[in-house]
Length: 372
Ligand SMILES: *Cc1c(COP(=O)(O)O)cnc(C)c1O
Image 1 (cartoon, helix red, strand yellow):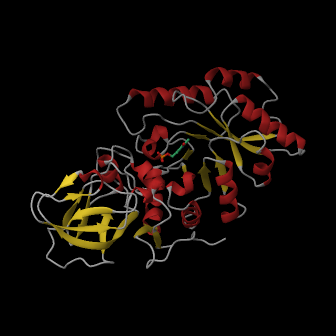
Image 2 (image 1 turned 60 degrees about the vertical axis):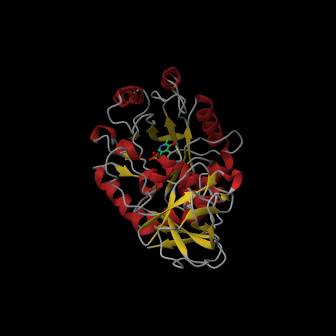
Image 3 (image 1 turned 180 degrees about the vertical axis):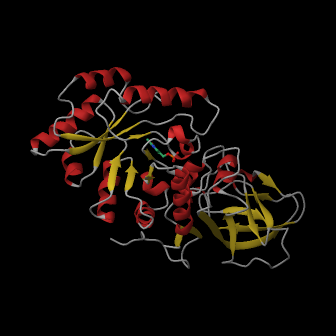
């Protein structure tokens, strides 16, 4: 199993994605130190928010991280092959009917989101004559997305055999509005979770995602589950980002040209030059996960090079009139994600969130991992 996934060579690829593992590790240390005595786990679902779960998890192992969360059983199986025995791997969506056996054999921990999921995990443990098989329970404390409802908690609490053969090793819940510190739902969910989890057998508790960590100590409990902040996304929207940036993106110039006044540029001629204009076409588009609606800019030598016209599947045209003539040649790189335009900046320009930008970045880029 290679530590890094396959990536096209820097010469062949149209764009270069740089992932700073040193920054991921520093972000992990910061989140851990923010969380007091709570254990700091790492959420690496959706292939580590698009940055490679295997690579990110291996780097965080070296920081002492021993607990990982993924969404799917398939992600868990693949992560187990990468990490080997030892680290705890939780399946947040729970295990789909029929997948209990393979997950149990790989020592994955099912997050039971419903009474039937819990029962299926228990029956699989019994079929194999196993004792103390770890299981987690997610309680729906108010997000109404995943987790055992308050009524079901009562039922499970009343059933003395609910955890037979199982070891309840974590009770968790997820906050709907953690990125809005003044939203009263946070405190309401915290109190609901506090009340419901006490009905179950005693177990470590977990409530906070990245933003939840910044809600303060009452939210930290025994274990915190940051994802986005590890990857440099701001867990405190509207305030200065406390995390280090992790991702850089540069695209290659394919060709440059001067167009005359009134030339239409790109599909639909959505842009028309007001006067003679120097433009460059760069090798990046929505086929790479760059959002089509993001009318953003590129940067070279600290100069802003605005997009002109529509984003195509494999190319974007930029206005390079801010540069001296002949500054850009085919193969030269322009900056698209970096200190001047962060993942969060790009997200707000595309009316989405940094999570969607990161998980969308495709595998056509040459990927460079720094600080591994
Ligand atoms: C995705 C997820 C997390 C991580 O959330 P971030 O906002 O990325 O920190 C934590 N817990 C659950 C249940 C999740 O689904």
